[in-house]
Length: 140
Image (cartoon, rainbow, N blue to C red):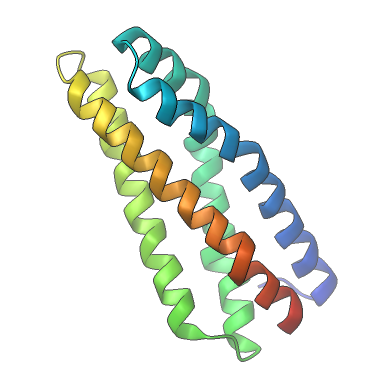
């Protein structure tokens, strides 16, 4: 667990920076998902390094470090369960998108999944920025 409030604040700042970097790329992915198959593949290639291991690590930092510290300080466990469940849904969408992109015959599924992932992940990060992280900053 993160040892002190200063380290927790630094982690929240780092996670917010990752959100700011990823949000415009998600918007581009959603936009290009409706374009040609080649545009979708190019958009996916551009975003793949951000939604692979870095996304796994981002979610792990929230689920294993930040969320338990927040709960230990009296934070709302129900909201944490909601965000944790969304993490699982986001990773499942990402994995399905990767599989659809790798299957060149399934471009329509890839389009649908790219739009779903972009929407789900953007909405999730915006909710974290607007409500969860401010609550954490206040409590931690």
